[in-house]
Length: 440
Image 1: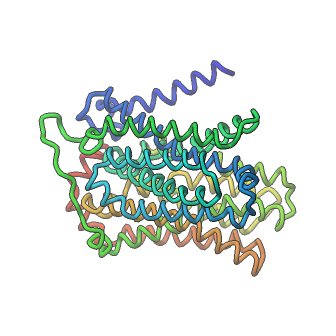
Image 2 (image 1 turned 90 degrees about the vertical axis):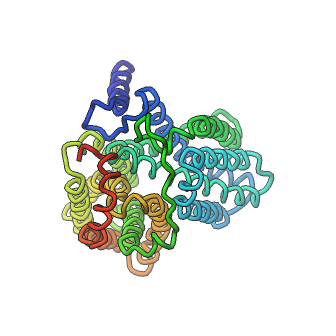
Image 3 (image 1 turned 135 degrees about the vertical axis):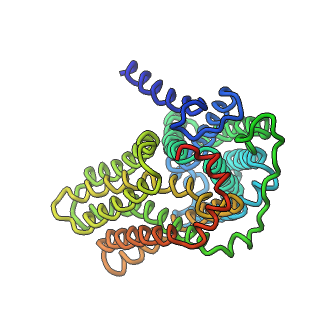
């Protein structure tokens, strides 16, 4: 078993490392820096996205212990989600401006320092109010890291690396749950888990600080002077209709992804009399196939055109939602949910990667920030709306919501592809897109 795991890990990281070889035209990797430098930046990028998922995993396990420590109820505990979401929204919304003013490397360094302070603040919180307040800083740091890394990979590498980047977030959540479980099961306080991850974030912030000059223009040849980032005002970007369509698309997609995971167990147990063990297994399969799909997409994606790939994924998700709502036989719900998770896997990374082509390089950083902030709101709003509908009608309203939203996502994406502004921006930014995605 151990030898098999080692060989599998070696194969996977060997494939990732091949991204740094400029001669492998099947991957979207800039060729300006030496292979070692390119490999180091990609490695930091993956570690940063893993670290982005760590706090979520910590909170999943520490939740009841934190409530016991501060003697609060579940409704009061939800305040931490409000402050975290607020910070996340604000930082990701303005991330485009921060990227052009600070550069991606310095922004990521400052954001990691911010999340480190928030995590250490969580560990040292003397009262619940302090824990809630530092959640605002933690959310702001996470939003800036998310937007900054997505902007870097979308403009410099392309979809295949983006798939693996987002898959690593799931690894971070899993690692966070493992770490906190290890801490509390050994008899230590939950505060230790937050302190450990906070210290790791400081180390990561220092890595970004040391390498800050390498993140801004890695696609340039070494004998060319680095150009200044294009500073596009937020209002200028918001005047573009296709930008608002993209914001709506991210709002709906993230909402439907979270809704499927959050309400499926209730659908199976309360609405269809499925045993708790089976329902839990099916939901686990949803997230497992979701993560596996993102890893696999990094290999399969090179054989499909990006638009073909994303259309197949959206159609697959819509068909899976239809089967989930139809429920023709007892186990169809589990099969449909797993298929939906697998179909969802490439959609978000692919949409982010194609953003520079949709809006042009001058508006890419701003637009990605808007989309990430819209995704955060959608991930909170649509599951909440689904819960209201389920209470007013029945839990069977959930798969109907999934079907309607998935269909809307497919139609909205087709509208975006046919937007007149799309062709105009593609022509204006063709040189930049071609340099970053030369194999398409």
